[in-house]
Length: 366
Image (cartoon, rainbow, N blue to C red; front, top):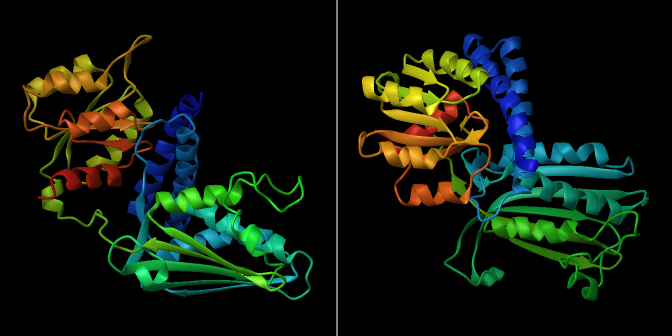
């Protein structure tokens, strides 16, 4: 059920993102219209993350989609979600001592969940105290064994500390706060899953979480996440290289095909589209394509078709063809197909021209 919901929402979200990008391409970067389209893309990107989380409810043994995000920008957006929940009796301050080109490799929605959960816990710990204070401080620190990190050499981390002057905790409580279903709140205020999920998310991002607290004085949670240099591929790559590409896109959704035709054709790419594998085979036999971009959910009538099998069948005929699969959710067989060289990669829907060019560049940067 969750997979079906994600599929339907992705099909609606894809043209929203693509046509917003197309409009943004036409507007001057200093214009009000450009700003409006940027807001549409920002909202659509958040919607995509939410849909991805819905999809994860039905996933087993699958890749988690992490992307590079500048740490300062990511954290400011996360804190913005918590501001409406901050009571008037609490002063909420933030300081960001982070370079623009440094960030973290993460799932944005999960990181938003972590920051929001810690902020809400701090607000609850302060309660109705008239001079409540919550302070968020972000910086870069080099951490190693002296900081309790027992694995690996010292390395730089993004350090995120959230401090409150709330009720604090006893040592016996601190030792249990990350246990599932443990809570000091009243039954109507929480289930005890929040900090357990926070810890799982932080660990899945190869990070650490540490807590210090004094009863009656307050608490400080510190997250340490591995720092990453910005290496994202953008559309600023050489136009001459882009214009030598020839791409075949196979998808049974006409809206997606029309959108990609408009957005990719603007860069001078030789592009052909079709809605089924039979037509794809004909086009492959009559054209020299560099890339095959094919939907994982193709069907013949009510009969689903195996995209991986199709890619495996055509591989001997077109050994230099890059095969990329578009999917609503990454399945185990796609990961295995990539590992065995049956496909070169996969993209999680909704896709855009930028994502496609990035995927192509990642496989063959030259």
